[in-house]
Image (cartoon, rainbow, N blue to C red; front, side, top):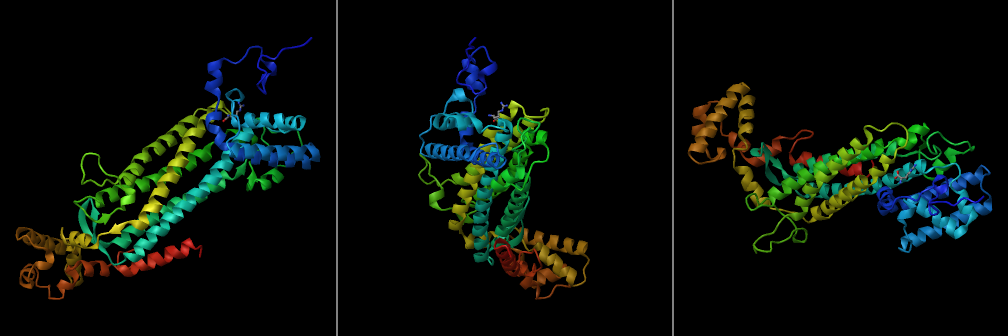
Length: 466
Ligand code: ARG
């Protein structure tokens, strides 16, 4: 008796008596997006085949045919000469079917001791590991731009803000180094997350492991994994690493979004603190005078989609029983988009920052306004023996006089100041200047130019891995 297979094009068709519904076929297929994993899928298959050979499952002839066949398929894909088929569902079955096409029998032996469940989990880890390294490289490029700018502008004075009200004078270099610190934490988060990504699912097979005497250490070593994953059920079902990665991505986007917000404000006519390079701005089709900070605005806007992907991935996992479920196919698009968004945003910032032009004069003028040295006057009085609360009160009165007469604190006469406190002498004027104010904050982590240079030095050492 001969049996007809209802789904001749499906590698799993044997037990089916009805062809797949056309809509279901496209609804369940992932090949339109998971073809992005092709290179890693081929790497994983080659390592698996070599391991099968070392344990005597594949002959030398078979493994050679498989490796050559897969390399030829890689070349076909790279030159966009590969016919992706929805009927073959995903990247894994497309490549496997093509291999069988090319090399026949030997191709059918590749899937021994393996399942698409451990295969896809492995591909995803290899892919994320690679992209994570690109992200870290781009963070370092942006850090370098910030550190260079900080060094160049170590003495540039600008107003520091709290509540977006002028608070105290700071140096522009110090502000750049604050951004650097945020990025450095972001980088470390990625580097740390990499350790948990770098565990190999292969060998877990569908969920329970395999009855072949596989050598998982060998495969792990070929693929550059630190270890084989310790539990087969966990190995095929775990997508924590995508969540952790996307959480780290969300934080770097939070930081880029905050930088963006400041760049948008600073480049406005009202602030006039910086000039963004023309090449990174666009004009208005109706208002000829406009130069819009589109790049930072877009980065700020794109932050939202990465947060969305984080929530999507968390929600994807929250109700899944062990082990693999098809739900996991939904991890790819959010993750891919997260990676693209972070890489592009970092690239935009990394190439824009070296061309940013600080407007020193405008920042200096702005720092003079808003009585930004009021705290320095209070500290001065404390050094003369006045209690801080009393000093606060005295300075408040000085600010009032300055407001009423439309002057800055440094414009008050010695006589006017002495009427408020007899402890004030003519040395007060050196601390009422913004230069004096920043220079006096000369401790580790402070805004003084000397400390900015030290922070720049430390950052450069750190970046060189010293
Ligand atoms: N395309 C699938 C995914 O991304 C591959 C694994 C399919 N496994 C299965 N048992 N249907 O998750």
